Structures are given as structure tokens and as C-alpha cells.
Length: 153
Image (cartoon, rainbow, N blue to C red; front, side, top):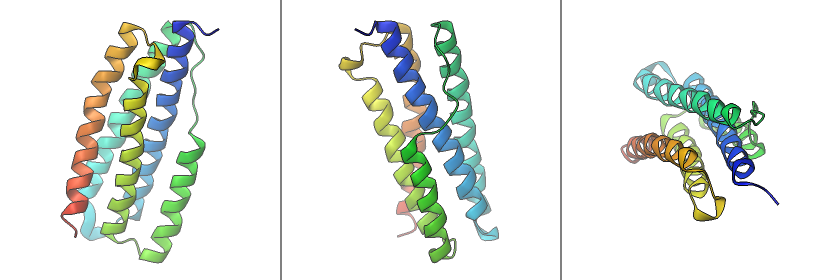
């Protein structure tokens, strides 16, 4: 039977992986943008940096709990980035398509944070507080991407 600490480490590592996906996704999306979309590069860089900070905080929490820190990405994140590559090839790197894909990624990380905070995970109070703080930044990022995507329609 898993202890609360072991379960917390598992949840924290899952969040590390999805934050790594987010970093890779925004880095890739920035490269797909045209010169006329330079305004989005700053937004994407900010969100990638937010996730880098999340990874650092989550990694420190895992280490403090005696766990081994995950350093990779999720399988679904790898698939998402591959889809972004394919879609960019066919769409000619258009702003709306890139924002749609970024919104899908933001939906996924938002859902992961909601799931992490569910009662069934039995997180320690300290870990719950950390995740809740990061969740607020994730929600703000999601809402920003959604608003940018909505403005394209």
C-alpha cells in the first residue's frame, strides 16, 4: 500500500512531466510563428518560463520527500508535439492553428492540476499548497491563450 508521501511524489512527478511537455510545446510553437507574430513569442516564452519554475519547485519537493525526480515528458505530450509539427506543415504556420494547439495543451495541463488536487490523491498539506499556487498561474496562462485564440476567430 502506498504511503501519503509516495503518492505525493508520484503526483509531483506527473506534474513535472506535463510541465516539461508545456515547455517543449511553447518552445516549438514559438519556432513556428512568423515575423508578424512576434507578440506571441513573448507570451509563449513567459509560459515556458513559468513551467520551468514549476519544474524546479516540484523537483525540490520530490527531493525533499526522498523521491527520485522525473526528468522526461509524458507520452501524450510527445504525441501532442508531433501533432503540432504535422499541423504546422499543413497550415503554413498560421497563428490561429498554433493558438488552437496551444489551447489544447493548456487544457491538458489545467486538467492535470485539477486532477492532482482531487481528494483521492491524499497529498500532504505542503504539496497541496504548492500545487494550488502553481495551478493559479496555469489557469491564468490557459485563459490568456484562450482569449488570444478567440480573438483570431
